[in-house]
Image (cartoon, rainbow, N blue to C red; front, side, top):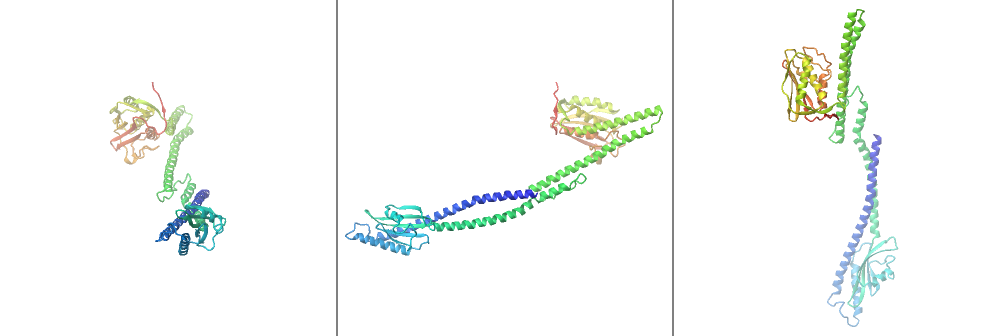
Length: 487
């Protein structure tokens, strides 16, 4: 059980590590993507604000872009310088955002007194921005690791004939990414702590979940062939509760089987011990008188015959659970009923009758079914007298065939009816002593159930009994059978 608990924990840990290994890169990518999206959104907002300021300043009553008079170009540069000065001074920017103005191809002013390396006034990147004549969005890796990548937007400011300057909005992403990395570090720490706590809790939870199995093992180990009374407690309605119910049901069957087996062995031993005792006693007391010896031999042979019948009945009951117990064939019901009547008339002087006969066929083992009906007739003769009636009949109803033996004898007490089909069972209040082994009705029941059928008893004290074997027209054996072809 400890190994199972460890295996559960190991699989749980592997799954958790797998999910963490998958989730961390995903979270990192989503954070970086969020940083990029937010920076580009801020750049777009800043550009839009500048466009509004540019329109308001340049399209004043004296437009900047009309054909200028003498010295008007200097006036345009002055007005553009004034626009940059006012706009850059009033804007409140984040630490990683830079506003850069370019006038007449030269760096003019920036929102920061010291631009990062790579963006100085005489840098290649500044000259590239100054040379652009159309709006440009771009991204570039900088040499300074504290700056990292920069995302920029360049807005050239032009007249119809020439470019006066440019406005550049730049955002360095390294600071944002460092914040994302810090967030990732915190997320990783939290996940590791959560994983450790989850594994600790999983260890205790696995122990609690497996507790019923430990109880099952303990209970199973405490069971012996002398004590099958132990049962598992049932808690809840889940799979473990279902396991406990199944285990308890199995133990009920085993206990019943062991009890039946023990009783069967005790009864069989008692039934066999009696003729052995009789034989041994008579042989020990047998003298030299020939007539006495002959009488003793006859008694011994009779007891041996009774033992042989008992052993044969026990063997038959054992075979009833084997796959080859039945040999199925199609049998004419009327013919079988009349044939059995002829056979059972030899059992004794009774008022033998034929109630009715069904027309049709049934798929059964002819010999086994005959044996069952003869056993029922033999049982009837033992509990009737010559004046009583014993009748046999057959009928078909609702896809089933009924074979019955009824008598007008002494009947069976209701308390005995519940156990009459058990092995070695005898009617306790009978006026007549049964000469059989007490296995006849048990054999009848075994044959009926082997065909997928059943046996019913209707009896009233002083009025007689009726035993009915109910079989399906198409036999449905509980075990595989051998099919016999008849030509």
